[in-house]
Length: 227
Image (cartoon, rainbow, N blue to C red; front, side, top):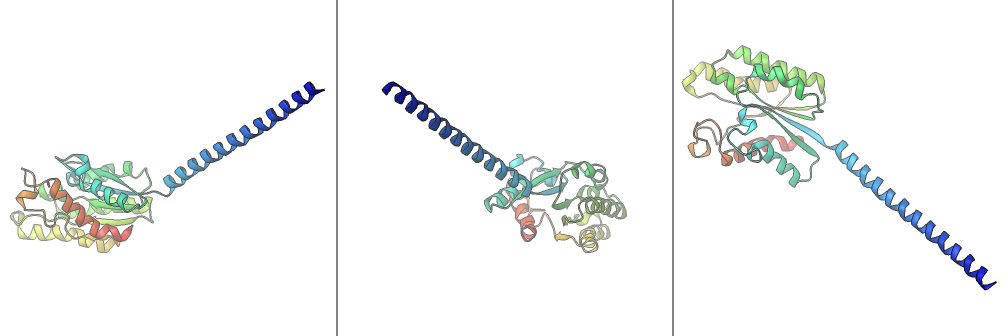
């Protein structure tokens, strides 16, 4: 009789233990599912900022972490804002080259588009009308694919030795396109950097790491209100 009670008690303990383990496993699974859902939600709510441009955006001669788009990402992260920066800069890129590769970059969702192209057109003395047409085509493609994307364009300038008329017409490309397309304008990307020897590399064209910090500030002054 005592032996039967002992066996019965042992069976009850085993049942309760099994139930407890099952509940523990269920709780663990629920916690894992919750964590996975949160990660998925965070990914879903993260928005993309595409910086599309030349070697100035690519960070020519610098470590990738020193290029101004990476510095913008650091600022965004420090403020816990849900944005991911995509660096679409390519050294030597012209407006025609950009037109040829923009569709590939638009395969990923874009919420903010920052256009930094045209400088290499100017350095090559390409016709102003051609640069305008190419940049407008790029803008149209972005608008068509992502009509709700916020649009930014970075202004550039040519030195006066290119001729006063060409330099002036080139400078007007960017504010004119900004007005026409309801884009936010960065007046001059290289403001406080262009022409300052200590802030540029030996070629006198590409900013140093210190110079890119200033570029990041020039961009942030405009970008922050769009985030």
